[in-house]
Image (cartoon, rainbow, N blue to C red):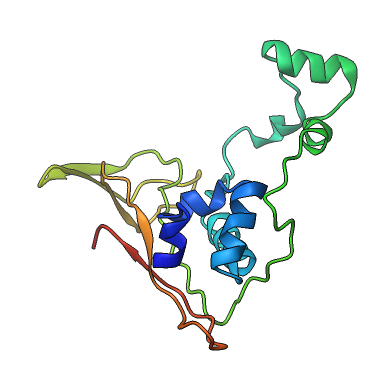
Length: 175
């Protein structure tokens, strides 16, 4: 952890936003940095909120063109993926790191799906949502609460130098 902090990596977001120059600097201090980056990328991908089905989903093939960039993509035929590939900036590892499935336990923070007919209350400055219909005939049996604090995650432990141990410990600033 201290080695990562010494080159400016204090959070998972810092690691995810790395540049090729910063990665080269980190590799001098932490040789397994590309593996750490791969772990962070996998954690963020697993915790990405996926869209849920909704009423009217049959309109998903309808193209709505809004804004200059979207209009240019529509008229030029150049997709956003092609533009992203053309504007690719290396992170210095470029897939060289390996995600360690055996040592990373990911618990993500999720949001409730779109609902109707929910019950809700405010208790101790938190909004709680109970049940509600997820679709026409499916009543959810879940409870969600709104916490305004966005949690921050930190690397709190790293393997000892000179060992083959690859377990990193992460902590969060909320219970």
